Image (cartoon, rainbow, N blue to C red):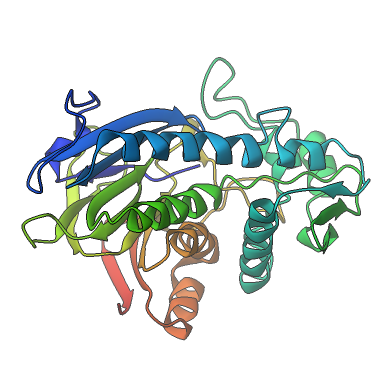
Length: 324
């Protein structure tokens, strides 16, 4: 659902796969694929290609659990159950519980049951640019309420039969964290994971220097960077109104939808970037802080430990909050 970055690590942008099966410490290997309708790129140093190919298998496994677009996924089974309980895997339970935590933390401004509303909007493809019927939005948003998601052991029940879950605002962060765990278990000490702009570093570069990440300037067609971040062993995730949107009658309609209105959030923010240890936290917080706006988002970040946020307002000013 998000996160376009300019990667100053230029080699990561190469989509081709190295012909080597293993790499010396100073030579990176790369793999790429498309999961959750986004490009996934992973580069690692001092490992072999079988380890990186396993990362692609891991992405596919989680996509088949979490994607609401795959009819056989666990999320789709929950959504189509019409209120009947559905037993799911430990991974799906863990992710839903984490998502519900952020629903509560945001006071419902981040809500994983937004799917009835989001399904009405199209920000890509043939029908992009069409504003949904107001009555349809009103009907759909009546089924958005994360309190209706009930968990009992490994069973998930939607108490509203017409409610639906969409984990697009948090799933890629969860998967990135699992990929990092796997790479570390394989004794990989230097790697960079990019799940559609969800950036997660394993350690630093092989030469001991930090990874350099460029923050994309919103709406800039030349992919200009407004800031450079140096990270070691951290996650960088961004959300903004410039990622998937259309403009009509001078108004920008973007994909971050307000559960209370059924329409895109209106505030003076273009982008929120979160730097944190965990990518799942960064994923959820970037959307949450965008929804809260600069003032409330700042207050939230100041209550959290080990999290930094960079807000870009509509005048292209950067507001840095928190510490890591």
